[in-house]
Length: 237
Picture (spheres, rainbow, N blue to C red):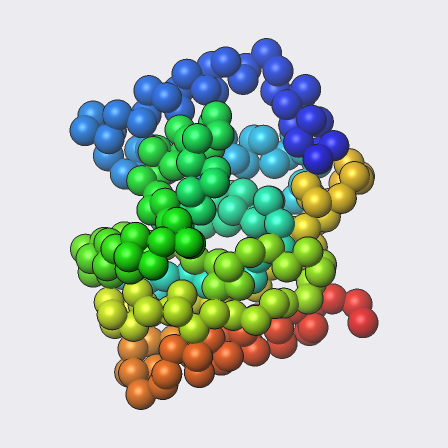
């Protein structure tokens, strides 16, 4: 958490302006998706630099040419989405747990990028979120879902990927993009403020023709194994 404090201190004089701009851009009838996301993308790059974090990005060429895909990263910590916001230039949105929907700034960002908010204890509401995502992906929006369901708290070690998180992709018949995050947990989930490099690898997508005959649990295992192999190949053993 010390790095968050560092980011705040080094941005102290401009924080009110940043917050004002984000609140203003939450007017989705006035500002289109590209404008809203573009500002958040630019702002994230600035804030990450002030937090002494460098994003080492690989595989942008693997992203599908057409919008309407879902990215499935491993979930290491609170910094994961910031690494994706900096490295992914095209707009995407997220699925956020309801516990964070009223936290200041997160609340505004949820509105800015029109995140889906999920109540993991409410099966009916969760099914509605899946239906909403399916519709939105078919309409050309990109999403990020953390298939582990929660951050691993085990560094670069993965938790089990849940098959149910792939239902929206299967329903939308859209490309599935595995994303490997390395050392992201060190940004906010340790007490260090030393200069840090976080790796992000956008892997080859799975297209519908490749996974249409697989069960959701089999897709989850396949995506997880590709991410695990990438992490092992790019970390010191």
